[in-house]
Image 1 (cartoon, rainbow, N blue to C red):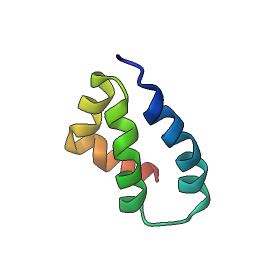
Image 2: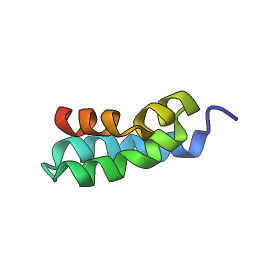
Image 3: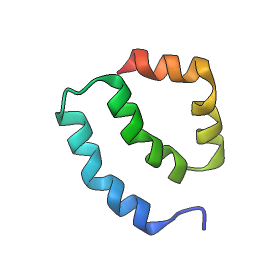
Length: 60
């Protein structure tokens, strides 16, 4: 149950699209949300913190 197959299949084509499209960080982060939700709880918890979100936005 920790590794759902459908989300992985859906996130696969979205990864190249997110990287190729120079859209604002907010849109990229919004697309990454379902990927983070599909990831284990620790990853989602880390990205739930404001400092982590600011760091992620700065990385983009």
